[in-house]
Length: 321
Ligand SMILES: Nc1ncnc2c1ncn2[C@@H]1O[C@H](COP(=O)(O)OP(=O)(O)OP(=O)(O)O)[C@@H](O)[C@H]1O
Image (cartoon, rainbow, N blue to C red):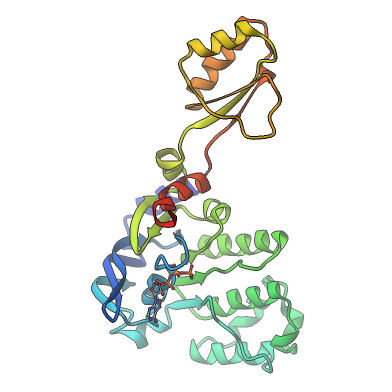
């Protein structure tokens, strides 16, 4: 779904909402981000991922115009420079920051009124509060909201006004699985309304579920920029096949003749299990053929395809080592 949506966006041939070209960010003498480039089109969700300190927040907040440490390259949002044209850009961007902490003795409604005034969008919050299940919370103090409610409020506030871009920095950190799924639905709906979304996350399943393109950062440099599916194919490593051969010597021999790499079985593994790596579905089909030839059922073979998280871990491993 993401793939086709992405092509549809590209087909429109419009100038992307966000264009980041060879962005370099330095704090004093220390370069934190080097020559990072990507675009975010209207209706597209793009993810920034990477280990702690890789530069995700630096990039996201530079795009949002609230961090000024640019040492090279360029950033444009709707054709404007978010730092130089700060006043004009401010009304086009909604932000949920990693460290956004709302004053706890403020009421939800008061905060919404403030955002409506800043974004010149009277009464915009009512519909949003309703769609995020917060309609009856206008009089609640922020301190009385659960973590999930606070995240949803952050999403409401990020959307007030005619924003063209929403930046979400680790939106679902700390949420339970049900709240995460609910938040994912909201982010998708936001993009379906034509808003460009740039998000950072440490959850690879989240990025895979939401983003049509991902920038993988390692020590401030881009190590991959593509769809999660293509990154998985290119960097996810081989599929793993587990074959339950029991004491069947003929089956073992057949498998050996396929010439696939045999790997140490993860413990605990029953005796009589062969673990091989190869490509899916080509090698899987060859294994099924081989075991069928000696009378074993296809259910003797199970496989595990590489995930986006496998690819991500492979890409960032060099840094962690
Ligand atoms: N204001 C700052 N002054 C000096 N160094 C900074 C500043 N902000 C970030 N850095 C450094 O820049 C690098 C990138 O930090 P950044 O917060 O952008 O990474 P991140 O990928 O968002 O990390 P995390 O996953 O922990 O949020 C880190 O080495 C960090 O210590």
